[in-house]
Amino acid sequence: MARTDTAPVDGTAVEVDTSHGTIEGSWHHGVLRFAGVPFAAPPVGPLRFRPPQPVEPWAGVRPAHEFGPICPQNPSMMDALFGGESEVWDEDCLYLNVWTADVEPETPRPVMVWVHGGGFEMGSGSSPLYHGESFARTGVVLVTLNYRLGSLGFLELGGLDPAYAGSGNVGLLDQIAALEWVRDNAAAFGGDPGRVTIFGESAGAMSVSLLASMPRARGLFHQVVAESGAASAARPVADARADTEAFLAEVGASSIEDLLVADLPSLLGAHARINARRIADPEAALREHDSPLAFLAFRPVADGGEVPVDPLAAIADGAAAGIPMVVGTTLEEWKLFALMSPSASSDGELLERLELLGVDPGGALEAYRSELPDASAAEIETAVLTDVVFRVPASELVDAQAPHAPVYQYRWDWPSPAMGGLIGASHAIEIPFVFDLVEDQRLHVFVGPEAPKSLARAVHEAWVAFATHGVPAADDLPEWPAVDGSARTVLRLDTTSELLVDPQSTTLRFWYEQR
Image 1 (tube, rainbow, N blue to C red):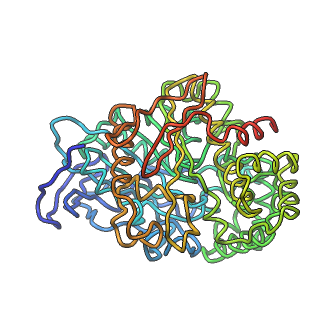
Image 2: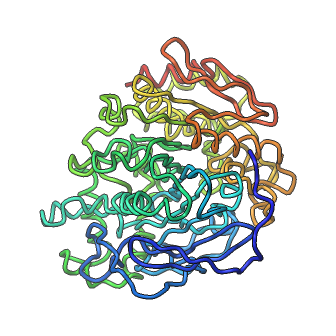
Image 3: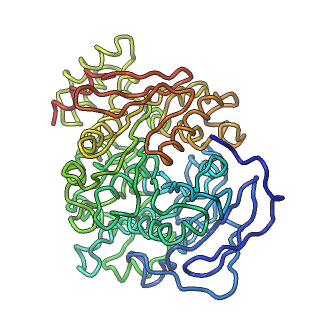
């Protein structure tokens, strides 16, 4: 990919006219950056728990040099692990950021819109992990965004008052509002609104997968990249309403009116206490919620309104027909979460935990032992939870979409040496490579100081090629065919990448047989 090597001095201001008014960004690290751009009205006061509302136009020139506040959230160890200090938060948080190399290119450039992860309860579009200079230099207009998190974005209140129907998905509606802004304004930044790729990791991948199932989002994007997350993440309405009852009790509220006047520390504190109980006793959370995602206190709701009752079935029925996808997971997703909770220490303890998943524990252990004969009980547990929470839902998404558009599947195998190898090929490890940021010293705590730059360039190039041409490809990667009905082709990404056919077929078949 050609890179832009010359640019005005950093700090040089540039004005762009948007649909709501003129903004002033500046050159930053050799590309143009417009930060803290509002895409919806502040969701405060009576707009708490409500769908995003239009931005009020402004007169004059609005500065867009600094990132806006992020959604209120509890502190997390991920702040340090993913390269930065905690950012300033405020309930007025619906801002996006744009990186571009040229607002007037000869040919409009593809647009990529990143939806951040963080379990629907943490993260931001302005994290150092997601800065878009490399994408801008390689010919993309890159947009990152904030959306409402936790109870502010995913508290289902329709059971208390029909006027609040859909409140359990206002975080997704924020994402749609940002995509509508992109549709209306991409051209002003040199982008092509007819070539928009949405991509995200973890909760971000769950989000973009769910957006693919939502009629309201149709036409706002043309391609999807889902990294370690899929459409099966939405919870049933009954579960969401039970969670709402528990949250109300924790806050000490008896009505929506009480929630509207509650201060943010009260809402965040209640969320933190619920999370602490689920982390301390994951078995109880699994029994109560019957979902491997029970550790997430808030996530989207399959309400039949904004989100289909069965999003995966909707995709299988053609909800995202004609939209190519890249879908994948990492080899050791669960290693990141195992840092925060003890793993099984014996096969006996592992069998007890497997039984909570509602499957034949002995059959599961046999399937994994056949592929990992020398693994410890803790390593088997990591493999099982990697599959249950991430790989199986991703493979189901691939199966649902493949009849309707090309789908390219990958598995990330490169293991980070950071923290003495405890991170390995864990959840989120591919992000600094996708953003071509492995040389950023702030991220070395996660990927180490000698992460392979060639792999970062190849993966970044493949994602840009997908956004540009609809096919992921790079000079240093093997040819990457779409999945077809005859075999599951998966690109294994590592310092030496290779195409695999039906990898880990025994364990995947086990889970498919448990349906």
